Amino acid sequence: MVRGRISAFPSSTSGEGGPYRIFATLCFALFFLLLPALAARAEMNIQEVKSRKGITAWLVEDHSIPLVAVRFVFDGGTAQDPAGKEGLVNLMSGLFDEGAGDLDSEAFQLKLDDAGAEMSFQAARDGTYGSMRMLSDQKDEAFGLLRLAVNSPRFDQAPIDRIRAQVLSGILANERDPDTIAQQRWLRAIYGEHPYARPDQGTKASLATITAADIKAFHRANFARGGLHVSVVGDIDAATLSGKLDEVFGELPDKQTLARVTDVTPKLGQQLEVNYDLPQTSLQLAWPGVKRSDPDFYAAVLMNEILGGSTFTSRLYEEVREKRGLAYGVSSDLVDHEHSNALLVTTATRSDRAAETLSIVRQVVKDMAENGPTEEELAATKKYMIGAYAINNLDSSSSIAATLVELQLDNLGIDYIRRRAALIDAVTLADVKAAARKLLSADPAVMVVGPPLVQVAGGGKG
Image (cartoon, rainbow, N blue to C red; front, side):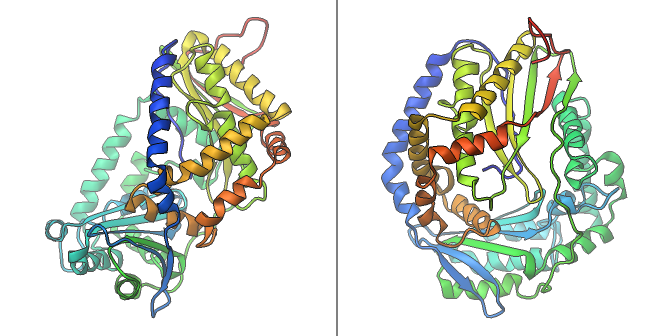
């Protein structure tokens, strides 16, 4: 399941199946070499640590390396940007290491370097994320700096203007980029007036309206214990972490004050053509998605993996690339937002073969909707998904910390990693076929970015 990611793919070509199969073979060989060590990680002990002030974190102790990774998120991301001030949360996220407490930007950065720590904040659609990696023997200094950043960011005017200029530079650079322009039109087309249709980075006009007072007000509303989720991995014990949780987060307000964001169903059954004279055409199609809490979630995930989620063995890859050489890559993703979900298929191909490619994608999806996968496909996909989880999610302390935060956001329980294999194994072929019919029978939304779509011989567009 992908949280809010839109996939992009390189330009298309024909042939070259051999090198890709060799690469895939090497990947699978590496997978089985690493499997024992990663399987051990899947059995790791996750502790729930609750501080005296009631802050909860999930902890995985690992004293083999003197490092500590911290990951946390506050509910409420760029969907909270007020109308006319789009880009506010993104701008704020770039300012936490630009001065806090009595330390201005330069002094704060020097202190971070002296502590051997790395700090970053990111704005996502539905959350404001923070992370820190530190040397365990300097954790007191590092946690002290994180406390300042979380509780007392300065939001001085000079850093605001500098970070705003950096964001604006990116916006200006993308003003003539076909993919960026198309993506903005796509979001408006499928989400309408919903906050998800707004550009996360803002616009030239909206960035100009954002003041230090706006940023400080959102920080007060957003950074509160009631919307906080924390995970920690590394060379630290539960008793020490309990004290650090109170040190960093204990003085925050109890509850967030956020604007209500409604659920939205993407508007399907439309075709959006963004015409540019390009040698290749990008295609994006959207079908209904599935909520993480839905009973048929695992059936939908397995179906999607067979359809286009698996890089080298999916049906879309076989039909679009292997048999016809129409694209370097083609994939499907289940995209998960807090207030909307979708199944996206994306690819790029030579512009003179775009209509053909679109037609094939539609046919592969139609066949999956009508007939579902085979028993053999399902069995192989279950085996892969169970075995690959550690590689994809547990291959470093930072990735473990990030995974544990997402499990908290999804309310999956601290024992989810142990239960996951059984949940996948329990899915039947009938379940997957039902999920395919439910999600893929709809008329999708389609976006074509490139020259006007050539008519398919014998009728219609795609």
